[in-house]
Image (tube, rainbow, N blue to C red; front, top):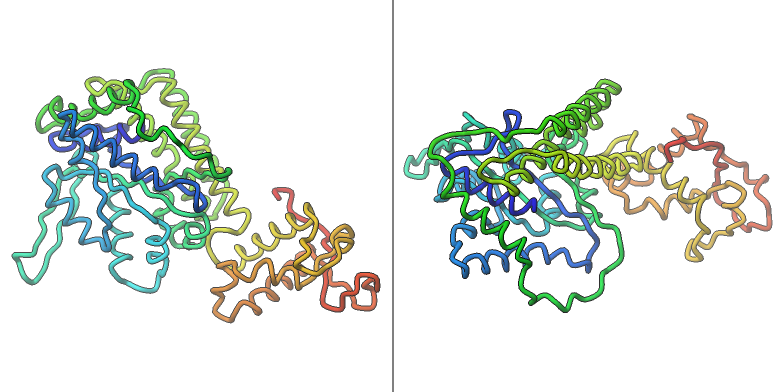
Length: 417
């Protein structure tokens, strides 16, 4: 339903645009799941739907779905300017790899310009907004500014590629806060043998209505998606909750995570309303509840990743990662490959060797400017100074453990772990 709403809103942008609370309906959505789960079905299914709609006579549908891979900001702006509609949903594969190329904050290049353009485009489908053009010394190559662009993006990636590519700057400058993250951490599903089954009539009608919006929109105007009283109460309460979360901390990453949460909920609810009633969309209580649940899950994912030190860089992030590793260490028997006695874990003692192996591929440790070993020892010293760990003298280590390396007693851990 979100996809059909995206396509429908993109179609309408050619002559007019749906707005909700002063913003357009652009969305950036990323599906995060492990390999061999079937993420590619997102691309193939959209392609099949486009083919079905074209065969049904709804040829406008395919004009608003784009599968191109844009390698720079100017390339994306030019594509929007040259598009007959000026708007589309971009279906991006292997988004994590592209994000990794954007992650170097010290290099100004094509991918950093794409990040800048995407940041700016996010709210460019609302009334009166203009996407700047591109000026070259060769005037024939210039790209004109475009009014009221509806650009949305839906991509997929694996967890390691995605989360290890995130930087503090992405968290703090609002780039990441524009995305809705949908994570699947379950098992590989059984083979779907019904891929050739016709699409359900309800879905077909939704897509057909979305395709017809382009002919229903009044020329030249912008109009708002209405919100019912019940839905408004729910959305206003969430907005106040977001304010409380932002005002409760000075952590820019945390503040940015909540900064656009209410806006994303509005956009999703608006898209659902457009899909259900394109001629006169009204956000209902059901639309608001569905949208709020989606955004709460999105925030929960990032909150967990931040608390576990899986996002960003710096001393605080490394400390969070090591504390999360220690909490996990205490919950499960030590694998045989570590060649450490599990009695050590049961006694609340961890070997430096264990931490070194567990964290040797972690992005925040590997990328430390003074090296991984320095980062590991520096983080351990910090946790010792903070009272989380205490080093055990070698003569105090039980001889039956048959271990001569450094080890530490886990004194305490934060309650959030």
